[in-house]
Image (cartoon, rainbow, N blue to C red):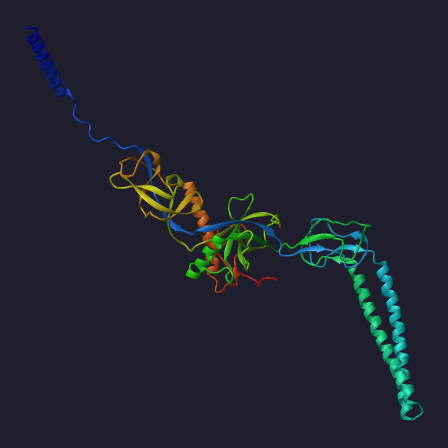
Length: 433
């Protein structure tokens, strides 16, 4: 009887549970639909004409550097220049005591007069002997003797004259002059000091009409340039004046223009680099040898390129990728090949096309194939774009100027950039040796 009562009780509880469940189902709200994707920032890739560049570092050197040394020994009488000043070729810089040299010149002049007198006497004796021999009034032996005296006197005059010429040169060398036009350093020897010919350094002079910038490129860069030359993508710097730009240590922009005039003939096996040289004519005041320089060279011709923000690039093992958003706001994985940085943007060599939209912020919150909630944003600020455009114009201007000329005997003067500074080509003189 008790078992029957418990069975009825369980059946009642089960019925009540079924009733409550049915009521709950009737009161449940309708489904809210698919869940929205995570919010991300997306931007359209930048597509524009670009010129790639390579950057190197180097030091400025003067084409001509002279370590001035005396050609004669003696005591310094006077220092004739202002230290650190500009000097012209032939300007006197030091004066060495000339009195001993002047005395030697005077002595040799007297010796020359004596030798010339002896020559005149020997000549007259020889001519007289010739007449007497014809009259058979003098022996042949005497004639030969007077001929020898005459020749010896003539040689003596030549010897004294040569010694006098050398003494006059030494006298001229007591006035130490500048062999080049340029800027002189400080005087390393002052008045009253004894200097020896060819030994003591008096000062140094560097030329200022132009400056060289020497820089080194690694093997891979060199081989890449060789491949581009062989494919016709660029001209060889060995026979074409490749334009370059330069920025000094305190300059953010490349305002100095020049050209490459020398590439070495071998790779340095120790450093694995090859040396090249750029020429900058008429540098502005204050640009002197020894300064650190950044050199920028156009590495390609102008072409349509794709640029993106580095933040949009992800790393997958050994490859780089971006997430491309389709028309359904779903992101897809896309492997990309990276190029160089151009300003604050990254060049994409392969993997993206014009007009595509990619995730630039929130890359870690989504996975390929998932929907997202996109928030549109420009790929770069207007400031960044303006800076990039200016850099491209600076690269394009000297190239256009050089390509517009009929031959490679043209260049662009080194000067600060203005609105028209690089719109014309100027004649390049033959490189000085």
